[in-house]
Length: 364
Image 1 (cartoon, rainbow, N blue to C red):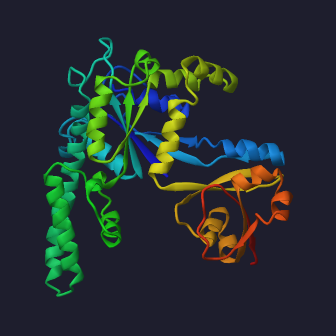
Image 2: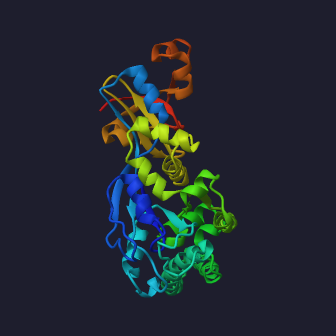
């Protein structure tokens, strides 16, 4: 899954990306520093893997991952090709969800593209460009559907009504993700690849002082009030601190976080929140060779989950032997869990749950 890290120039976007991936994306105090998107693969924090590793002592431990894409800064008029607008819009169209970095701190040494700090204004600048782009898509789709309607097929009437409703929502300055859609409508919307239908997390980038004071300031409060209206989540981070944390060894990292009074880094929280935002869960496999987490979408059935490991396992699926992670930990060993009847045999219709420790039986 791909997450696009977006934001106006000089909001801390590339600094945050550096911390997420340790990829060393170029970072400078001038607009359009990031032109081509930098990409980083990030492990999803999962303490369950550590516990399973203690139990199985495997040769290797493999976490599940998310792909983050650092996308170029945006200015007003991007939907009309201003700045790097066309590139920005093509890159953002390729991601599954958006992490929108919003500057929520004052610093006279870092210029703001609009000359002052305004979180909601900054969010609306990008949102409006995405809305303008989606409007163009919908106008073309509506014209095409009206022509198809002449064939007499009633499905085009249903589609046309939905498309006109989407256009009306966009014209009000509201994103498509704010609409209430049934399952059939949602499937149609997914085929449109609209920018404003993508789920969003707002990353409120605050100063070190604000973070140590609890993270809230007037700018963050303003952003939270805005996000609440569209049902979006706000994560408070300090990109500069996160970049420093990312350079530390694990033991030093814990000591640094303890000194700040934090249980985990802002990035770990952001990565977990992003994973949840995309409707993803992990099932686990464990043995002496490898302990591993596998990414699946919620409501995935056992054979399709098996296919994540190998297509042959899905094709020859017989059953899945499953024990809940919590039950396995309480029992101490897989054998003990089996003796207590906690290892279940599940068939093709079983819907996988987060934390299922799974052994697939198959025959090809």
